[in-house]
Length: 191
Image 1: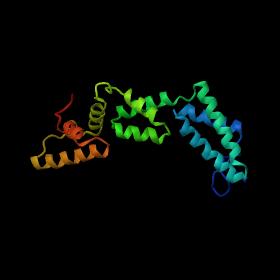
Image 2: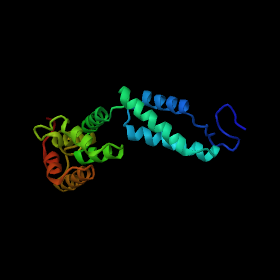
Image 3: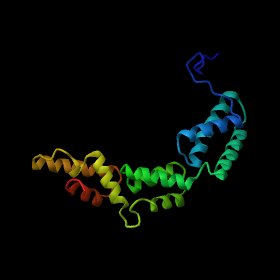
Image 4: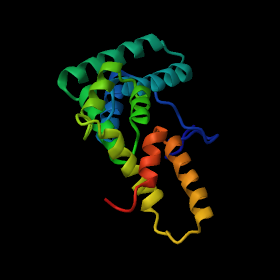
């Protein structure tokens, strides 16, 4: 028995039976809200197919075929474009201060292949001059208020040294190499 919230009497969400039309609507609804790679959308839709197959004792292979056909149709129509998605995602991550290592890992986690990831990294601002990592490190330090971007500069020498070490450690955890982290943290003030 379900109520008007779409939940069963025990509070669990009712799993709808998957059809090709249902998957199409679900995919379009997702793509209206979020940009996605084809592998990420496939993973999302297959989760629904598997949940439906388990709940309704249906054949999950039929649902997988629907998902494959749907993804192929969206790629042909241009609704899914992994290359464009990779460039857009990489650019956004760089603006937020993501290191190239972190950007590469996040793009690979979204199901993009190595060629698309390398092309996206090559399209980053400053990539031609080798400044992409520096630009991202500056953005990260500015956003996190590390090093010269910290407003409280009246620290004792001992406190400043301890703070510098912590800032370099934060940059390293964010995926920046030691040399870049030191250069950014030791940089004085705003550019």
